[in-house]
Image (cartoon, rainbow, N blue to C red; front, side):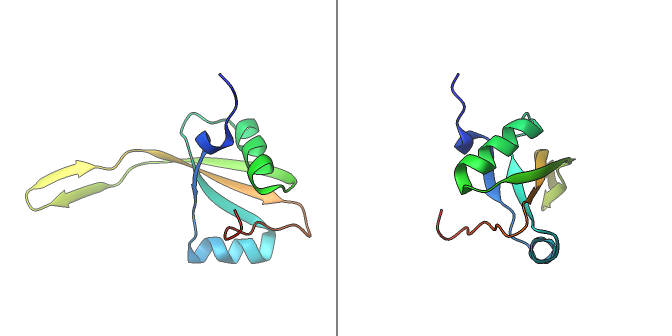
Length: 96
């Protein structure tokens, strides 16, 4: 199977906390597929956004419980990746 970066990265996580670490530490957060390893995430970000990745940190996030009336369910588990790019580089999500 060929490597496709669009199948690794689901979407960027654009939050207030993420904006703060982007400005201070040059780090970006992404929602990625749960079985992606750090090397796959690094290659996908470098190919999609044309930046040099210094470090990749990942976290497995547990799905939250949700209720609708008397029925309850659970959101699926997902994986978050925190990607550090080299100083002087940035990712512009509007251009991609």
